[in-house]
Image 1 (cartoon, rainbow, N blue to C red):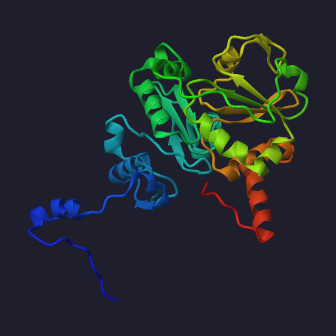
Image 2: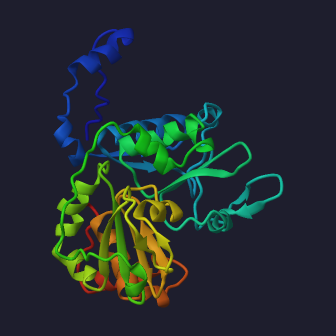
Image 3: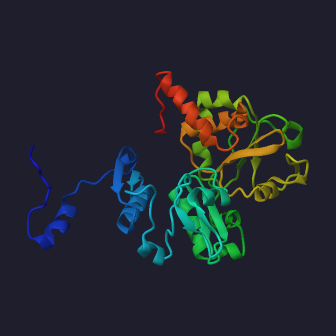
Length: 323
């Protein structure tokens, strides 16, 4: 075996410039086809992983510990202060009074899924949270919201609406949408309420992706599927029987992500989809509520998912989480 370090020729002080000049560029449309592995989650690794992900690459960031550790130089600049393993037992001093394990902190902060990013103020009070993945544009808006301390004046949803300069989305139909204004009347069975608005940059992708998937549409047959315009002031009745509007209801639910889907059953919220999900996780989260597996696994969707994944693999089928 020949070990080739691929060191560019020429004087040491010119090697990097020469290497950059000779590198082949990757077409932006092809970046999603590449997986990049970053080893280390400190200042260099964390920065590299974040930058590459924003450029469109699929990035896998590995650390040597059981969970990512904070890079103090990043924290000093106001960046990532801590990464928590929601199943971990490492002790964390959350503030002067609360010292808990990672697992207990996740429960305290009501973390339902990963990744979840929670922004805290100087008193460790949550001022914003992102459940699940976000597009680079949406994540940047959340960072600006916190950096500008806009949470003192408005909600994250309100801030996002103020910053959007154009209407990005025209409402699209779906064969399973029901025109219902009294949600309480259908709340005794699984109910999926989809919140969209005219500024939703990810709504087209939802309709062209998950909502065209035949298997997902079969799972949706277990639900009454209602779509609401989250900017509308038309009167509706919410699941609890209160007179409200779609705009006020989305705010009451604390739903900042569009398209956000809140899943109800028997008159109460079971869980929600408020971030980007792969097809498999999207489908199984719907199944978790639509087939009432939450009654068997009430503590966590992931308890159900673990059993469900084992069943699929034992049957000889593969699980595709690449799309």
